[in-house]
Image 1 (cartoon, rainbow, N blue to C red):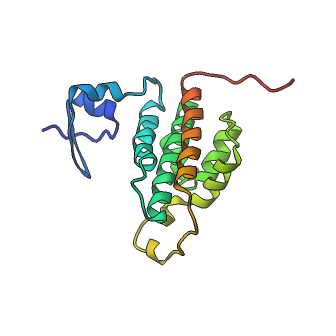
Image 2 (tube, rainbow, N blue to C red):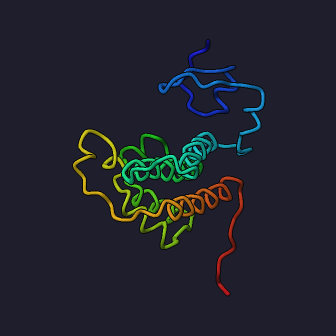
Image 3 (cartoon, rainbow, N blue to C red):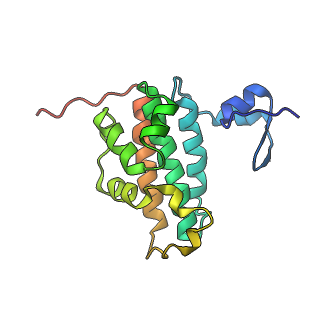
Length: 177
């Protein structure tokens, strides 16, 4: 068994397998096909965002607090991938953004992400800071009324699609028409 600190599938495949904090993640030949095909500073982080998104999209989180916590992880990883790609460092993101998805989204939008969909802006405000939805006192938080799992999933999917296009080098022409 090989122990690695890389949380990306790409890193685990390169290492020939790995042990994660949550247990042993089996590595087989077809796992390399799961890679997102992106290169650059944000590629591994984006790949992790997609991995966490799979659980949200599959409806694995029944408690709204668990769903919101996982949604926060997906959004922060996705936005963080974009910020890394344009030159931000992990330390810079940690010091200036922390767990605030709304702040990360605002910074990324000002830096060219241009993802200002109302559903994402609303979700980012609800999530921030997303750590509030997890931890010893999360049970003391009020239950959130009627979180639409499908809407959260669709909103995150739109965000990840936008980030993927940006990481792949797509540039949207200015709307000067």
